[in-house]
Length: 164
Image 1 (cartoon, rainbow, N blue to C red):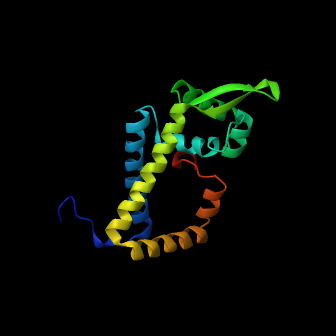
Image 2 (cartoon, helix red, strand yellow):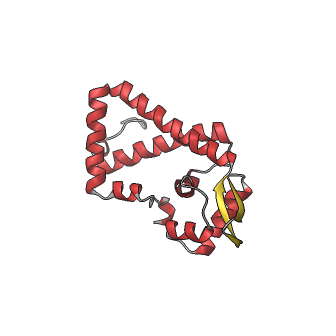
Image 3 (spheres, rainbow, N blue to C red):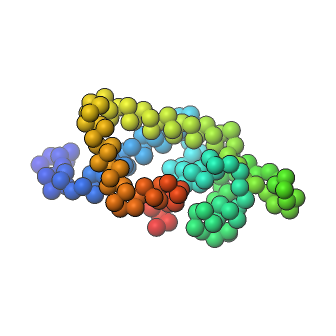
């Protein structure tokens, strides 16, 4: 077998196939995001962005949503701020508190990610045809529901693998 070939055993492993496709899609999304928003964007930034797209919030609220300590959330926010992806501003309702919000660059990264995911979906639909692509999406939704992934996604509880 040449080094580029995949054994039947691996090609028939659902979990490995989904992980491999997910990794390839993630790489493609990140490349487009970086082309639009710069190399400072990391794949793991999306886990913070999924909450900030809802609007500005305090570090305490972010920590609660992310399921991490306030110290860990503060560290993530400081890193994102240093890279220009978020801004902090005074909370108009509490002069002692600051709110974290996506910066213009952060929003460009979010929009580029959305565009990249739409491009991938269009590419897969063109490759498989609309009927097969629709069937695949339906099957993936059923699987996602069965394993609780849709609930996690719906509640914005997705975490980087390194935090699991």
